[in-house]
Length: 313
View 1 (cartoon, helix red, strand yellow):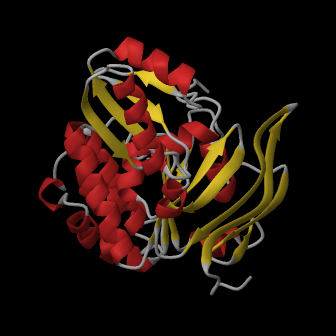
View 2 (view 1 turned 45 degrees about the horizontal axis):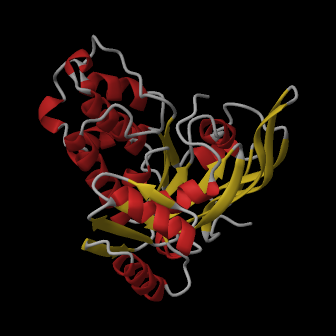
């Protein structure tokens, strides 16, 4: 592969083993250029381990990797010159200002990095707080300072490990807007996360990973299209309606969720199945107050494909 590859990240059967435990299992991953890409999976699924292998922070047991079309680890230094990354929470010297922290980081890079400090701080919305000590920064501000540190390399690719962790809704919104603006500039941003809603709002494409394996990857639209639609029902007797639907239809996923019921429908002819459900309930003398067909969500698709969610590592 040349540096002009269509993909900024490529792995082939990438594997990491600790003794008998396989943390990353034969992963084939393709991240297209110029997108926000979500690497989505529950805690303990091997997301951070894969990132650490890509960055050369831990050695792969087997498989091949390429960053920006360059083989890693053989040409790691050349590839990482145009990559910015945050693994775990960004760490800075709290007694130093935001600007001083960036100066210290830029001094270890190429001379041009020093000239990018002011622009990076402006870019992430911290120019007015650049003279304040980092110990006074909120979690969201430290995350943005971490991205500013990444921008010192003028990267083609940014890799962010769980960047939304610990952020309040306002901080998530700010970070989402920043990530989208970086993509609009032609950069690629890879986000490792277990936060489905934020990934769906932020990313163009994802890979879903569970127990170290990539179980599905593609564009958000493609993956959501394959998710089972759901039918939300509010009626006069939730418990009786749930029992009737389980007994008189082939629907095996009928849940009582206040208010009402949530029914997962087959992907084939969901409108026809909705009409059938309505007839069954009305024939049983149950009054319907709400019958709403909802398209499949990324959350539904994720839960279909993964075996656990939020399990401790």
